[in-house]
Length: 124
Image 1 (cartoon, helix red, strand yellow):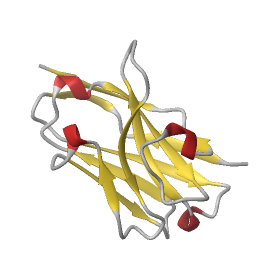
Image 2 (cartoon, helix red, strand yellow):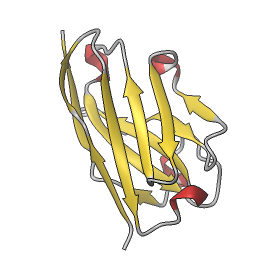
Image 3 (cartoon, one colour):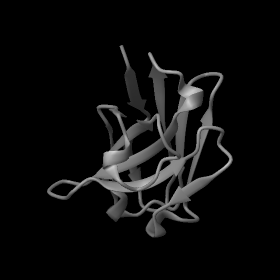
Image 4 (cartoon, rainbow, N blue to C red):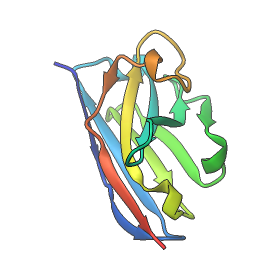
């Protein structure tokens, strides 16, 4: 049974930092490209960042480039998102996702497995 379990969300002030993580089980984690998406209340789910299976390439949406860092520990089967200089517009539920057949990307349809999400709230 495939499970992706996010954790580490919470409330943080604008300008602060937070690290969220996603623990995987039931998949050959090291073979999957992984990504973070987010969904704010009343909005569509949007791409945040992705990382190839080996961690050699990463991609970010423009609005988080330079503030967020995606990385992974294949031995522990954990995906991370380090977020800094947080803004109120970063408030959303953050989801991790796994792509077995490709190198990831910004399209939700590329990903076979999804976690349940972790809430990140940034106060102004």
